[in-house]
Each structure stands twice: as C-alpha cells, then as structure tokens.
Amino acid sequence: MSSIAPKSDVLAPVRVWLYILAIMILAMVLVGGATRLTDSGLSITSWKPISGMLPPLSLADWNAEFEAYKQIPEYQQINKGFSLEEFKGIFWWEWGHRFLGRVIGLVFLFPFLVFLFQKRLNWKLAPALVTLFIMGGFQGFLGWWMVSSGLSERVDVSQYRLAAHLGAACILFVSILWVVRRLRPKAVIWVQQGWSPLIFALGVMVFIQIIAGAFVAGLDAGMAYNTWPLMDGQFVPDGMDQMTPFWLNSFENITAIQFNHRMLAYVIFAMAVGLTWFAWTKTQFDGVHGWMLLIGVLVLLQVILGIFTLLFVVPIHLALAHQGTAFVLIGAIACYLSDMSNEK
Image: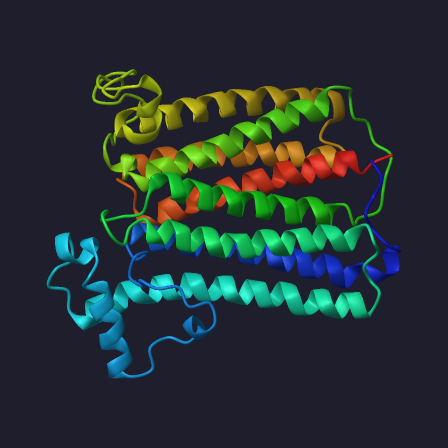
C-alpha cells in the first residue's frame, strides 16, 4: 500500500499537529468518563454549538440552567433537593467535556487551513484529513443524541447511545494514529505472511471489549459483582438468561454484561500472550515489532486495572485509568498495523 505522505521535509508540523489531536481526543475520552462516573452528563439540557462555549456568567444564567435541569427525571427522581452549588459541581464536568470537544474542532480546522495554504498537504492526504474532520463533527452530534436519551423518560443516558458515542471516538482516535504513522519514512522489515491479520484480529477484539465496557458503564454493571475471579461465588453466575430473546441479555442484563466483559478480557489476554511470544521468537521485538512488546505490557496492565477497578467498586481514578489504557492499547495496535502496512 502506498504512503499518503508528501515530501518528508514538510511533514514535521503535520505530524506534531496530528499527535496533539490524538492526545486531545484521549483527554476528551477521559473527561467524558469522569462525566459519566460523576453522573454529570445530563446537567446541561440543551445543545448550543456556538453560544454554549460560554459558561453561565451571572447568577441569573446559573438559575436558568438549574431550572432547566429541574425539569428532567434525573433531578426529580435522584437529585431532588440539590442546591445550586451541588448543581455547579456536576455542571462543570459536562460543560468541560463539551468545551474540550469544541476546542478540538478548532485545533483541527485552523492548522488544516494553514497547512493547505502552505501546500504541506498533497491530494492523497488532504481528503483523509477532511474525512477525520467530518468524523469529529459527527462525534458532537452523537454526544447530543446520547444526552437527549436521558432528558425525558430515563434518569440516565441509553447504554446503546453511550456505546455508539464511545465507539465513534475510538474509531476517530485510531484513524488519526493510522494516518500520522503513514507520514513516517519507510523501512524494510520482516513481516511474516498472515501476521498483520492476526494483529488486526486482536485490534477487533479490543474494540469489541471497549464497546462491551461502554455497556458495563452505561448500566453500572461494574457495581454488581465486586469479586474476582468468581461472580457471586460462581464462575458462571445465575441469572444470565433472564431476558427474552436470549441475545438481549448481553445488552440489558447487568449479570451477563459483566460476565461477557470478563470473558472477553480472558480471550484478549490469551491472544496477546501468544502473539507476544511469537513476535519475540521471530524478531526479538526488533524495529517495528517493538510495538508488540508494548501491546503485551498494555494488555497485562489493562487486566490488572480491570480487576482492581472491580474489587474496589469502581473508584474514579482506577476506572479512568482502565478506560484510558484501553484507548492507548488500541492506539498501539493501530500504530503497529500502520507501520507494517507502510513498509516496503
């Protein structure tokens, strides 16, 4: 596959810019996770793409936001009696999450226009970046679509929409890393036939696990069984088939959702151990295959974080570390695949 890079002497600012965007998206995911864990996501009940960049600036503005919040089920059923100061505590998380999204859009748009003017982007690279920008804008729509699900009949957002929002963020993050890694010089390395599909399969499994984690978060399934390796004294707990049709359990039954998340973790761990061992025996992690060593370490770290997050009943610092490491892991897999596909 040919590179999408223009001449190498003009690429340094573009690479730095894209890496900054990737880091900002990772930060956005972490702030979003904190917003979810602090039950702050429904504190802003309207979507104002332009005027919403400014927070409330007066007591009247704060009271208007608070009154709007009082109209939704979350306040009426869970937070009734909240003071204005308590409301501000959850408001700032959601406002910060939205504000960071707007900043990311600006950080993308203005350097992109500058690079176009400077002719740093060729006709192969520019369309890829435009696609990334559209994907970023779509994230804003998905975020509001998710929030809107909790404003009328529910006291929280739909786990399905939460999974869509997180999944789209993951795809955007991975896509940026894929593009930026293709702006590096080419090299000749060993890549055994069939190796890239195996790494891709690992990436798919990690992506599925991230989506499964969104369902765990969306239904607070991590609060249900806080022991390991058993759940309620059993490896396969009772109550996993309560819903009809059976497949619905995987999306709405907290017992099945947590069990599936655990099983996927075991599968990913086994895959990572096998692939890491094979990469070592064939390459000693030379060159591009150093990614495989990092991937193996990240999988082990992610398993440890997952277990401790569960045992300590989802403390915010461990939960955010668990979520962030998942994105770093799938990002490393994307970089590995991109580097291999960019070799000749």
